[in-house]
Amino acid sequence: MKDGDGFEAAELPWFLTLHWGWLLVAELAGAAIRIHFNWHQFPSLDVLLVWSFLQAGWLSRVDQRSTTVYWYLADLVLWYLRRSVAAQEQFPAVGVVLALAIAVIAIISLFHFRRDMERYFKDTDDFDLNLSGGMIWFFNTLYFQYQFRRVADLRRSGSLEITPAAG
Image 1: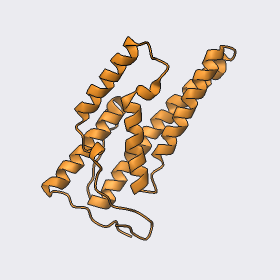
Image 2: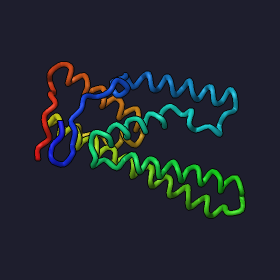
Image 3: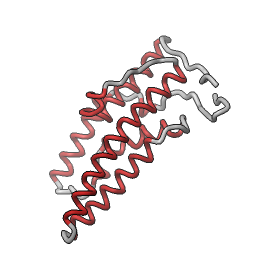
Image 4: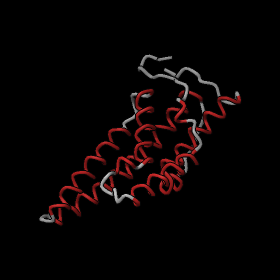
């Protein structure tokens, strides 16, 4: 259902209702594979990186106000740029500046996701998530997954019902 701002209230897709423990198992398995085969140059095998884009992409699709996926993309582009600059070893200062920019954008993106997720569920379910900054800082993608599943469980139990967003 959409309101006048193009806001869409939607059911959570299957991948957002998975238990966060499965993500942790998949991440550890992916890390073991990268270490065993010395595939450190393939960050795309990082399950939590891919999953964070799935989470942010879904939120961006259902709530056009969400900008988190663009922050994640900017961070990934800078990461690849830094990696190519570091490989050349000619501009170490540029590598340091890029590393700082990556860290700052990563922090901004996590807290943008927090804002977007809290706002979305407040608008669709009239539910205050009040996501913990500390949990986001240390466990970000796993913590977001835990919260998505929590909302899905509350919806299934009938404690939360999707409502049209207030205009």
